[in-house]
Length: 350
Image (cartoon, rainbow, N blue to C red; front, top):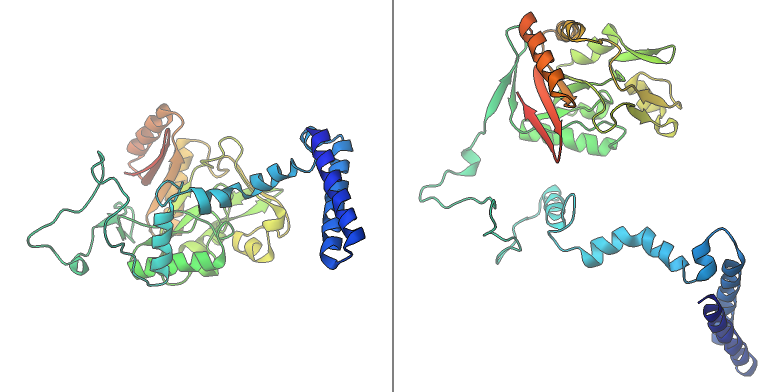
């Protein structure tokens, strides 16, 4: 195949040269230049020893890399239909775009969904329907008798996404949406940034890196009462969430690369700018259930009685059983978020 490709390119170049000789116009000169350049690239590909595919298929193999680089765009724009895209299909993306622009999101004359499929959810007609504007929605009160600032929360809220992984505009939009919808916005473990303070209720997440809740001592992240309290007592903060571990990175924790650790992010997270910051796989503030319960109580007191919850990944059911037994023994329970990682991710609120 290599010889065939080279022969075709050489033939085209020779023909272009003949045309230039007999018809010396700008068009034939451009054709000769292009064919000559492609021939030189093909010769280089056939002689190099780094890529066997290029050596066997000079020039043509470069198309593979091009299509590999552009496959996501080709899939999205030319192959994917409105429903089969993952994790978010085109139909749902269009709804987000339309709502953000305050445009109509309804689609007339039917649907592409299989409404007869088992499990398909829909709204049935009623002779006397309730106007949706009059529906307030359910609220849940968080906080035990040990909390002096209980919080009445929506059953649907914004899950944890940190500033740094999201842009400032995205964080501001989420928090403004929380304010408009009267629900809560989880800060993520990256701490509370100015962009979280747009009027929406906040759930302040404290992860193993203690960003916005601790400091570095000899390269180790430790919880700091004063740094934490400064953020926890903010009026926007309604609850505290202690994140046990890095759910998607068991055993080694998360990494904030040095190039992403800007001066602004460093100030928010109480770290040194321009350095790589590792979130450990576990907390340095506690190492057993008794210490965990003491830490929860301390956090609750530092936050002036606001509800405190924990978020964790279930790796061993025995650990969960022992933890709940410890809570019962001390009669001190947090709000419990269980992240069950099995075939799918399922969040249960107990």
